[in-house]
Length: 285
Image 1 (cartoon, rainbow, N blue to C red):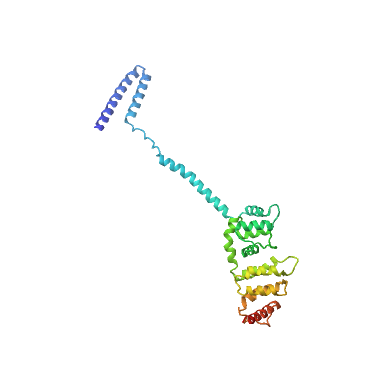
Image 2: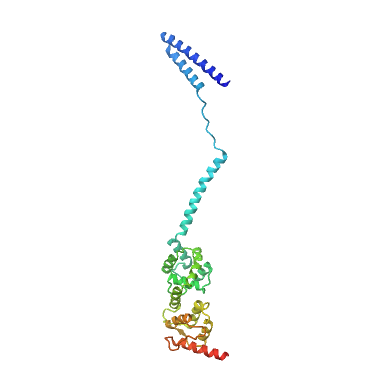
């Protein structure tokens, strides 16, 4: 039905157009073509409008599509920004490390005792904790209780730490360094020079006992006895040769001292300790 109506309308317009062309030729002969051409143009446009398809309407985006597009763009930008920020924070920054240093150094170029106390508090470590000795070794610090700017930047750079949080996350690594025999020996030797007064060649006895306790107290079963020996001995200082031999003694001599060679190259200090220990054992039985 719809098709028949459309065909009827089309045929009607074609018939009208044919009539107009006839009139046009008649008017042309009478020199009245201008008006006729206008009518012809109008009729032609009418025919086109009748036969042409209606224009397609653009689909309006649904509310959900709009909101989704609106949200996705900022989210994408945010994610990229976050990834960039996290990546930049992961990378070591000398500038951040310098700013971190001056939080404890104040106006000086060295972190002193007061700054060191705050530093230890911030990283959650007691100043007497052995991990502080390992950190000082990593920084190649020259004096106990002090970190210079140069030591800080070089050492923290090697650790890739430029913030309190990063150093906290590195504490387990620093503790694990002591588990390796070669590193432990290096740190043990370093501790002597680190702890001694710089105008002295030897370590005063009280400081030596504290450092020995820090390094050997948990690993050498004979340390408590050796510490007692030092307390009652005539010694006031420990020299570097004695210091290094104590470590060797703790590593190689049996707990009952049965393999100790009195004619060996041990310092007199250790000869006296062995003799004192054996006498003590006899007196207790």
